[in-house]
Amino acid sequence: MSFELLKALCSTPGVPGREERFREVVRTQVTPHAEEITTDSMGNLFALRRGKSKDSRKIMIAGHMDEISFVVKFINKDGFIYFQPLGGFDPRTLIAQRVKVYGTTTLDGVIAIKAAHFTTPEERGKVIPLNDLFIDLGMSGDEVKAIVNIGDCITMDRDLIKMGNFYTGKTLDDRVGVYVMLEAFRNFSQSNDDIYAVATVQEEIGLRGAKTASFGLQPDIGIALDITIAADTPGVDEKDYCVRMGEGVGIKILDSSAICHPGLVRFLKELAERKGIKYQMEVLSAGGTDAGGMQMSRGGIPVCTLSIPCRYTHSVVESVHRDDVQATIDLLTAFLEHSHEFQF
Ligand SMILES: [Zn+2]
View 1 (cartoon, helix red, strand yellow):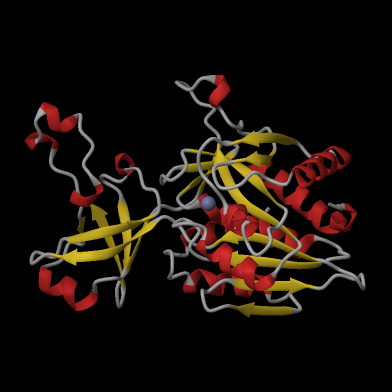
View 2 (cartoon, helix red, strand yellow):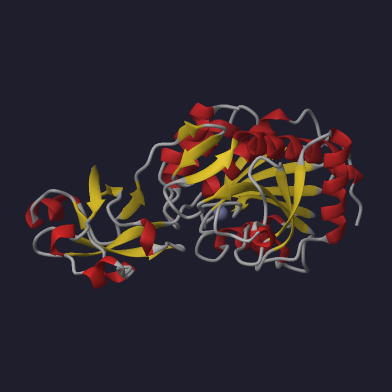
């Protein structure tokens, strides 16, 4: 585990459709290990390690580079910025948070909050709609407009830290998935199959990058790496936990984007047992991953998602358990070394 790498991934911006800065970090990481690196017109990055078998298949592993974030929609005369959200934000989590605004220079900002002294009791109990939230950059209208333009990117601002057995911060969705992919891609000893590590774009707005990436690549098998919801906290019924923190990698059975290939699910479960890797089976009632985008490509592709359990998803305090991250790396690495044993 490299906490420093995971932290660097979390602090590099990747607004949907504007993943270029993050892609360069991924490129730097895969360059020493890949035999070939390509990108497509959407911005997906493909890193290949060739298999040793003559009749090798193509395995696509995918982690998404984009994060839920915003673009500048309007700047008013006093320099307050209104924004367009990209991805599923919960407005309750945004008030009084710091952001980064990527103009011609990078600026610090805050999502403003009305002073408590001036709010009525009704206002205090109400969630402010996303459309009414605005960002203060501490500058005049003219100063802001000299640096920031309509369409510029905005991300939340929160450093990753260690907290007990957890890592917590912003954008673990899907920086931790990309991290798992990078570690496994670098670690696996050898495969019979051609392994393509694909850093995808625009997942948070409808699995768009995974769709074009898998259509172009035509993989034989697809594995997405992403977080899933660990709802194992007070106030939630045990039957609705989905997965638990610290109980191992999630092997997804289904979510609202894909019903995973049952043979592939069984293979991954048996592989985890064989290798002594802690795992849990996952049925997620809402949400999706790049597996959904890959599966529906061309004539259909067998897919599964390996999930990292995550509490407080889509907030700046997303949290994962370090043992679950390691278990996910271990199972993905084992899969890359044993993929030829899976027949469908
Ligand atoms: Zn995700």
